[in-house]
Amino acid sequence: MSPIVLFSFVIGYFVLLLTVAWFTSRNSNNDSFFIGNRNSNWMLVAFGMIGTSLSGVTFVSVPGGVGSGNFYYFQVVLGYLLGYMVIAFVLLPLYYRMNLTSIYTYLEKRFGVNAHKAGAFFFILSRIVGATARLYLVISVLQIFIFNKLNIPFEATALVILLLILLYTFEGGVKTIIYTDTLQTTGMFVGLVVCILVIIKVLGTDFGGAMSMMADKGYTKIFNWDVKASSFALKHIVGGMFIAIAMTGLDQEMMQKNISVKTLKDSQKNMLTFTSVLMVVNFLFLVLGGVLYLYAGSKGINVPPDDLFPTIALSDAFSGTIGVIFIIALISALFPSVDGAITSLTSCFCIDILGINKKEGTEKEKKKTRLRVHFTFAFIFFMMVLLFKAINDKLIIDFILKFAGITYGPLLGLFAFGILTKRKLNEKLIWTVCIIAPMLALGLDMLSNPGWYEAKLHVKLGLQSFSDTLFNGYKIGNELILINGIFTFTGLWFISGRSSGTNTHLQAV
Image (cartoon, rainbow, N blue to C red; front, top):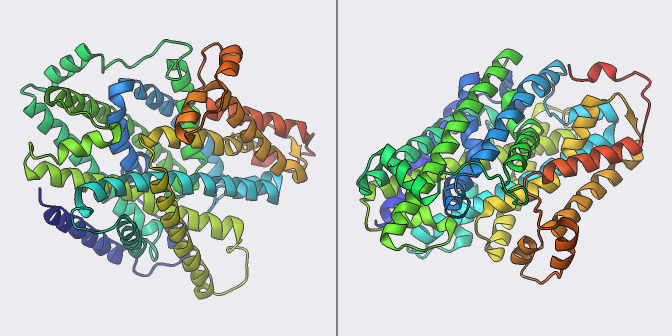
């Protein structure tokens, strides 16, 4: 299909987003930007969060991973279900009871300033890397199939996309994103379903027939009972549970939208609805991966996993319609994760690092500070995308989950220690524990998975013999985040003492 036609649809989509942003950002203030004036509709938040959770990486990498990993990813999704229950009935009541704007304020009230800053730092680090990895992947797809053919360089594509995202988020923030995310999640979901149906039709079968064909190939296998494998069922389920708790419940971006809902009851309804829909959508992504591999096998297509979907959707074998649907669905999956990330990072830095809500000053002065921070993070995103281009890694979802296991561990440990114990910490040593714990987890993971790190770093580490001796073939998987959290929790215990009871009213019910 003509790249000019595809490009025109991309521009038209941006115009639609800017129109929505203009209507929703009128009469906005800092409270609108940070928490949507606590007046967001829970149904819109629930639906829009689907797009934020999935992103363009899910749209490309999850289907691409079916060829080598079958439906094992759904084990992680089952773990998400357990994690979201903890968020709904443990964390959300805590956040609402304390009337938080930034969830990391809890750490300051419970342990002091250092804990607050540490929590905010690890969120900022995690979100910058995770969001820019997702952004890089989708820009790469757009670059290959549209902008290279128009002789537009990658750097220009990344810069323009980030500037357009800034245009519809800098004023309204969360208040605007609630609506734009709903629009974009709709585009992603419709695109997903249409693409599955079209490819099934091309295969000359129906949904049931396609599932049978996938089962014959072994693609539909969900549970892996090999204890040593990194995709062992219990590892994926437990790991998925704690990934959900950390990457959603302890993540300012995700919780910023939840606590923008007026009441706790509505916020919990939002979380439960979001959970139900997310499970269905993730299963459909795996089904999409299965039919893509069936089609690729019948046509002799052999490309890297992350290139499979765009290669097929934009090939000459399909009509132009599916190409347009793919592009719209892809950018619909991308933007909720990027616009929310920049907004939440701005909120976190302004509130948790700069303490803008505690400082004297007019609304106009605070807005000026917020805008400077907002544009600075956009620039950081641009530089990180260029870094990922230089690395040029494929199947980025593996990298994101691995990095999250390292950086979200201290958050998991800090919040767990605050909620599950009544002990107080030696504030001077909090940073020490929060740095040493992830380093220990990283070292343990490198010993367990030397091949993964050698492939990513393009160096020979010489750790395989140690791995064989220490782990006897066992591979750490998504349970890395739990191991990291346990290291952090243990370290915090050693620097803690009995509480005087001053902060016991902050414990979760």
